[in-house]
Length: 144
Image (cartoon, rainbow, N blue to C red; front, side, top):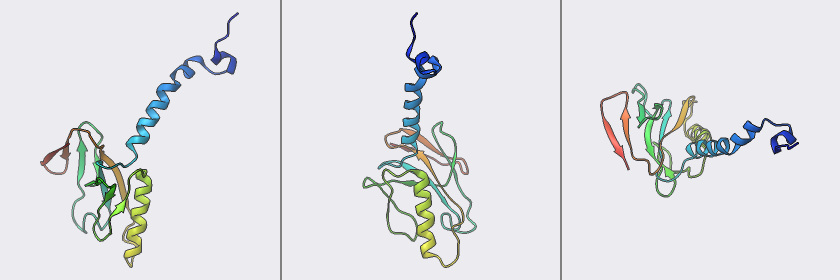
């Protein structure tokens, strides 16, 4: 009688065989959620980006899911520039951490809580050649 490793561990053998693919997919997802120099982020900050009363753009890069916000490039030094703030170092940060940092920084400069809602999404990764589309207006541009 022969036992395969999965059977010996009491795990489903097929599940164990799929583990390397699952780990690879998780790494890819993590890389997609981490800002790096050359990336383009979609950032929306309520009452600050855009200014009050302006419509919020909906953007899409290639076949990626649409995101809400303005396209903000991550510079080669890993910084983003937002209105009323000094450059913010975001290289190697998770998008959720960037979002929290933006809310904190704007909270420090406004006297009332105007930054109740903010979102940071990945619009395009560095090196991706994709067409950026504004789903709110007919304009389009290519990213290198």
